[in-house]
Length: 554
Image 1 (cartoon, rainbow, N blue to C red):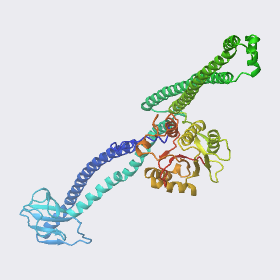
Image 2: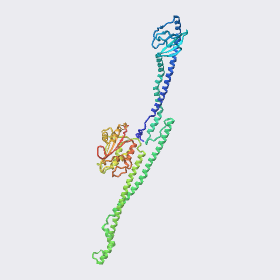
Image 3: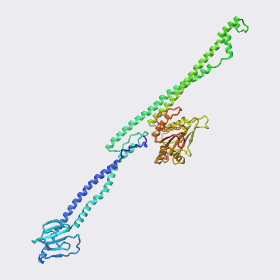
Image 4: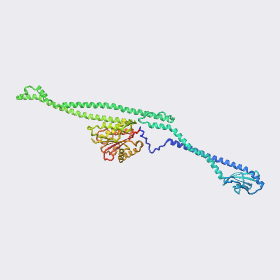
């Protein structure tokens, strides 16, 4: 089947790509797992930072034990220690008595105690995280406070440092997943390409592609299907060939025998209708009648006898021969008429059998091959074979090829010949006698091709399809073959079914109703769009067939 018989997908079925779905699925799972890791890492980091900062508060509290000894030596009071480089995020401390009165504090510590009454342990206040511990001297407590802003900043920085590498790895993971998925799907892509290349002209089995086990079964099934299809097409083509041989020979022999019998009857009829010479008639009379009966002055008896004898043996044989000849001539003419009707029906049977064989070959895939050939010689050969007027100066087929000297296309030359023969034969048969049939060839981008497309724009679907085909890359330099005749316009209902087998357009001309069906079948196999129009665009009557051959510029 042709590659262009690009498969169509119903609108209700949504198309999707396996690689995209795999990439999205894997990336989604990976990102979900990373999100869980990030949350756990953040929680663990926050816990560890809190532990480390609380340990630092305990260490600072132990180092402040000497300040209690100094304070006892100096006496109690509300002293403030003024230290340099005190910042809002610096630690604050207080030394209080058992009632919570502040005896000594840093400059950034509040005047009132952090915790009143003092109790050992950690406390979370509005601005500080406070650690309270009893001093070595009784009735003294050491309180160390860390600003919560500093603790939050430290926690956020630690979490960011721990999580940022994980977040930064997501693009790398995405690229790796895409690369791995595409690399893993390469065998499937190669298998897809091999299957896409298979068609009526290429039914070779798919070669070994180092596929995984999951795809090897698909390859084996495809090769089995290709083998069965090859055998089915070969059997169908063999049947068409054998049927052509077995049917043509008996029909040709029957036609030859009927024509020979027709010739013999014609010669017999000409012999039976020839008059006898005068001397032959005289010899017959003299050899039959007595000598005295030939005398003109005979008696009554002699006259009666002569007349009676002469009529029986002389005059009566000529009348009998004349009546017998007329009867024989009538019988010969009747037999000739019947033979002519038989010969006509045999010839019609031969044409129908030929068309049926062509249709069978077309359905079997004779147009699947993709050989490069020149379209112009094929068209000229078909035109010369079909249009052989007695007056060679007045041909019916009017070929217009413009300045084209050769047009290379891809397809099957024999199938193209059958296609063109049926289209041209249909145009000649169903047009008025001696009326011309216009056949034109033009490139889609040439002025003549643009004129054809512009004329067909008024025909609705045909013009739209031509314009759409012209937008396709492979059809940009296509060859447009147009065949037009002067037949009466056809109704739309008849035109839409005209390419079905045994459907005729109402013409009284002799035909089988298979010509356009054969042409349509071959055109589909060759990926050649075929358009029908009636009346001809811009006219009130006529019938037009357009074939668009993709040109092979290589």
